[in-house]
Image (cartoon, rainbow, N blue to C red; front, top):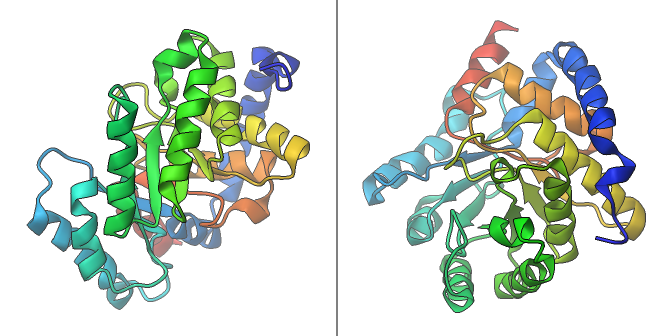
Length: 281
């Protein structure tokens, strides 16, 4: 990564910035900020127990959300496995909510590229607006970034008009520099978003990983003018946890980026936690 370097930031500076951000998080605990956070949720169901009926119930919860929560914005998207995209497409009645599908051999990206690309194409053909894929972490660790870049470029092409969100699986890396490099590779490939984690391994999302990714987004924007979104995901269950990521985006990228166009949180139970806090306030 000759033109982008984590070393110009370094772990000492990252840790210092993270400390400042975490100390400022509770300042952002306002009703309006919690409402913004709710509008940025990708409501997610990625269980081995998922079935047509459970996903139908999941969608109906989104369809009827405003009936019981008229003053809270609906979620940004519904994220499911590819085989359930037709169910979501058939039942979803909220036009602002995106249909999101994991694809490309989620969650490990360890199969033949032809299989990955065809799965992406099928998910888009079924009605997915956004595709969440996983970068091959093994190739990043093995310093084979050019291979990872080439595959992601093909994935971007397979998405057609659908947006591409690239999961870095930040918990797989020993070195912070690998997280930064993976983020840059994903953005060079045309990612519309970079995402922390699949939620299928530990650690999942962490504030430090998200901060490194936000710094990479800022560096990429300065160099190219492109605005890329950030999606922390995995283990985010409380309002306070979500507010930490809100504060990272606000401090590094700007408060204007806290919209569904540039900020998402992948979560299953966060919606209920945010609504509970909103009602308290």
